[in-house]
Length: 107
Length: 226
Image 1 (cartoon, rainbow over the protein chains, first blue to last red):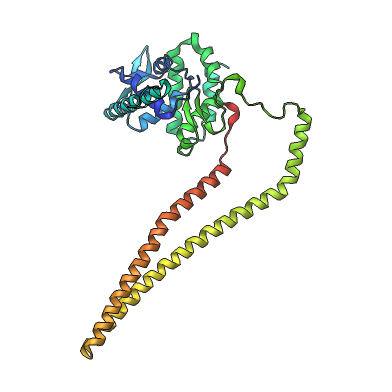
Image 2: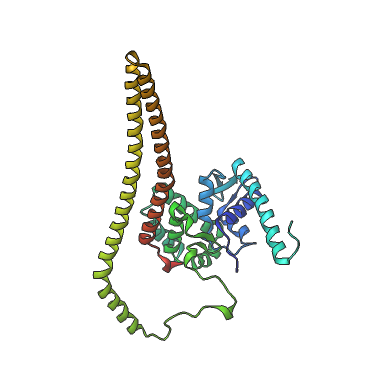
């Protein structure tokens, strides 16, 4: 893909994907979900998830699945607030870029 | 390389990061392989590239300093300063030195190293020392002005006290000296405040600039695995 996805956008996408699962979701599934929009590699998301966890935007808990331990990620209150901020920023940003591309009148 | 070997190699490669971070990362990838299932194992190992590359991604995530130098993209962490953007094929820059044979290249590199090392290292050390010297000199100059300002304030206070002690002998002299002392204190304060302001404005900038320059000189990046 031509456009780079910066750290903030990737954070926002991961937060959005995790927020869709109120019970929490796990690394492999998050990667597959993000891949529906972006061609991320398998190793891209670990540092992102770890950082969001350290920033208290995500919390983790372990649960038994299929006789083994699986680590789930869940969005926190702070993460929800952060995501709301990203949504607004993205709306403004994408609108301006679209207007510029299509040569429409600027708001 | 199978999954067990991959994880073992990753554990070794992460030997120098904090144990907590290592266990977190290994736990993540262990779960990742298990959730993907055996059928996907080969594909994932192939896509992850090498344990070296994964370790580098993990380490880059831990390293706060690299935050400004690259970004997490669709292909993982990377240093964007040295990348070429995708451009329409007709506009792609031609790369240099395609015609050179490897032997000539090696010879050139050897020559550059032989000639370069005796010159470059002392020169770099000289420039570095000069820059540090200038920085220290500048800081000392500012500190001198600051101390001068403080000395003026002290002198003003002394003059005031002396003036007040004259009160018993002569009113005009006492008032004159006290007033002069007050003026001197005011001047000293302005003087000090002005240089303090300059100090606060410039020194952190110079220091951070210097740190950036030095760290960019010494910051190693292992680009080969990306």
